Image (cartoon, rainbow, N blue to C red; front, side, top):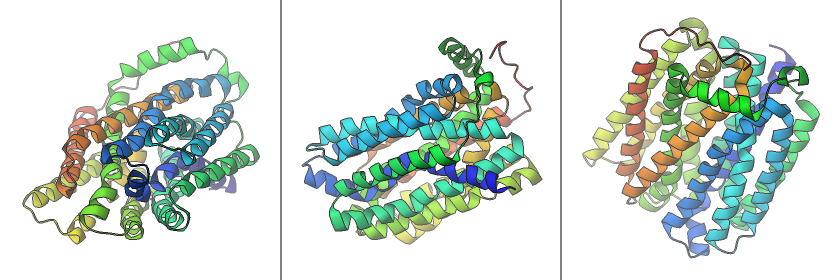
Length: 402
């Protein structure tokens, strides 16, 4: 693979990670934000949930814009909006103001996430796309591995507001990197015929595709299991198990290492066994581990070391699920890659936000409700895999002019 190939993976990985970095650096601060702003746990969790909602919903607009305008202009605007939201969050005097600027942050963060997937589809399909996606995720892995630890250090030295000043600087650096290194992958001649009307037709077409919707939902419930963990783990590990913010960051990073280490095997596994088989085995393994963990913790056996070991194995399986389902879902839709990526991202975050909201209703500070929600997501992913990949489906034919 060429230097250009790796450089593309590096740039796309960084652009994709800008938003998650704003989540992962922020997680160790959740309890202290509540204390500083005199806010309830639910209100602090809302500042996380609103970020997910805005990051997911805004993709439905940004994706078509990337088909109409090209890939780079919407990313520039997204990074600027993200930076403005970060400055506002850093200066927020109340939790309500923090929530409002987190909403703005989420809108800006969505651009890099949705358009990066479209760029991968612009350049490659099949196994090569899976390999590039796994390299992108390797760069993306810097966020959940290093961001919580970095965030905890920043919080200890300068307080939680410094986290938002830090991500503002990261957004500015991402703008410079985008301008200097990433070429436009959707030139003007490929945009002919792209419009908001064609995007609406594209959405209508994709919503009718069983294969696309099924694979998107499989990935969505897989990601949802991680979203549930994001929203509850700091309270479980810091307040229930008594970990310091720094130890929490280490614990969080261990699971991220499992996820992204396994994701690097995607290219090899799919080349040897095929994308469909990898999806089936990975989803089944993930569900088996999480259901077992849920059943054992229900019996009141809840030591931290056991939960850590099982989550490590489970999220390792999940590392094979996300890139493979994304590549399979988008393989047949190159002409509307931005629109397809947008719908996929919006549905992923909608499913994730719903899972977080439902899990939050039952959360009581103990680990079992969090694990039960994760296991439920895994079981739903298995059922959808059987429905979607149970038998081969003919390649879809896109509407004329799309």
